[in-house]
Amino acid sequence: MALNVLWLQSGGCGGCSMSLLCADTTDFPALLRSNGIRLLWHPALSLAGEQDLIQLLERCLAGQLQLDALCIEGALLRGPQGTGRFHRLAGTGVAMTDWVRRLAGVAAHVVAVGSCAAWGGITTAGRNPTDACGLQYEDDQPGGLLGTDFRAGAGLPVINIAGCPTHPGWVLDTLMMLAAHQLTEEDLDPLGRPRFYADQLVHHACTRNEYYEYKASAAKPTDLGCLMENMGCKGTQAHADCNTRLWNGDGSCLRGGFACINCTAPGFQSPGHPFHITPKLAGIPIGLPVDMPKAWFVALASLSKSATPRRVKVNSHSDHVVLPPVARKTRLR
Image (tube, rainbow, N blue to C red; front, side):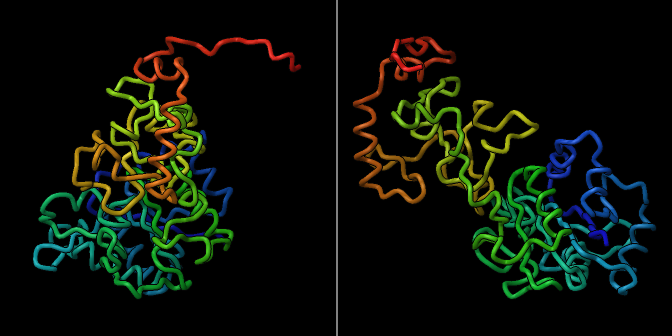
C-alpha cells in the first residue's frame, strides 16, 4: 500500500520544493510511484485547485483518507499575538498553524522539510516579527508549534530533514524509508535529523582537504586554499553529506567556492558574525572541528603549517593551480 504524502508550504521561500525538483531522475512522478509514494497534493506539482485541496484536507481530518506523511516546508508563523493570522490557508480563512496542528494530529508521520520547518531557519532571523518557529523546535530549543512531547501517529517525533535548502536526496530517501517501514527513532540523531546524512560531515570528501591538512588557508574568496581559517567555513562542524552526495550530480557549496554555513544546524541564520569571516580568539578560530580538543588543534595546526609543501602553500593563495605535483619515479609499479 502506497505512502500517502501531503505537502504544504508555510512561511518560507519555496526553495526546498525547487530543490526537490532537481532530484536525480528524468521522471519524478515515476520515481515516487516506483518507490511506493503517493503524493496526495503539492502546491507546485498538483493540478487540483483550492476547493479540491480543502476537501482533501477535510477527508484526512475525518479519517476518510489515510494521511501517512505530512510534509511541511517553511516556518510556522504564530503571529500576531499567537493567532497565526499572518498566514491563512487560501480559501479557508483559517490560520495555517491551525491546519498544521490538526493534520499533525491524524498523520502517521510529520516531516519538516528544510531548516525553516525544522528550527524556524531564515524566517526567524532578526527581530522575527512574524513569531516564526519550527514544527518541534525554536532554533535549538525544543518546543516549536507542536511542542516537545509531540509524537505522530506512528510514534516518532517530527522528522527534521534540515538544510537550506534541503538536498532532494535527503527528502526522497526519508520518504522511501517511511514507505518501506524502515525508519525508526534510532535512525534519527538527537535533533531528529535522519542519521543517513546527519552522521556525515560536509568536510568529508571536500576537494580542499589537502589544504585543510596543511592549514594552507585561503586569504580571499577566489583562492583554492582551505576556507575554514579565514573565510567562515564550518564544513568540519556541519552534519551533512554534501560532498559525498553531490548536488545535481556534481556540485556542493564548497566546490562552487562558497564556505559552508552549516545550514543543517539550528541557529545557522544568525551566527553572530558575517558568514564569510571566521571569528577568532587570539588568532585561533572559535569554531573548531567537532570531536577535536582545542589544544590538539593548535598543536597539529602549528605542525602542519611548518610542514606545508611549497606547492600547496603557493596554490592556496591562487585561483588556479600554479604549481602542479612533481612527477617522480618511485620504482613502484
